[in-house]
Length: 259
Picture: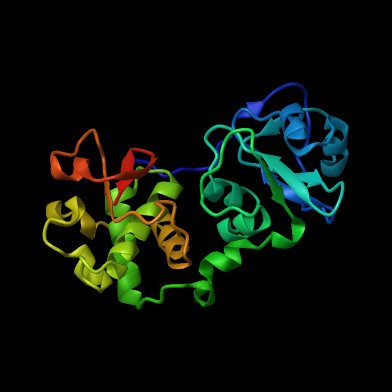
């Protein structure tokens, strides 16, 4: 099991010093593995030289996990979806929300396609650190005990999964609370007999880490990468054949999410 951390993979073409401050006239973009200034420039409709000038870069070396400023050519910016993208990841990358992206682009679902051009505007940018910690932004209020139970469930069930997958596990629990076929409390859902493997085998009582709590907070704010799922399972290890008959909504990491 491992926690997803920022990658430090450099795309070497020359040398540079990556700017760490945020420009007043551009968007923040979190560099992904495989990115180059040329590819980023193509994706956002700016030149390599414009990227260098906006970030005080003297060469072409950039590092995955760092943040680069995209110079603002007009009142809005666009982003071209690439394979593996999701609204969840794009929203995190630009410090905005899934709902903001959907509203700006008139999207009625979370489905996006490689090559699709999405609008990203500066006025949608938020400070995620503050939002993640603020209970005022929650759409689902919980007690401290319920928060701990959710974090334990996420950590014990999904600590080896990507962050998006951990948020999805928390969302499934909340979806069950709302669903008429499940207990209507967080504690009731988590401790329903045979509902969660980690509760049955005792791993539930492991101490959750900060990532688990952050994932829970995201789910409490209404983020649901599972798209409304009420079940999830690992198709490699699942022995229950009934669960495989459920309608699959999405796959995140090693988990399949279904209804």
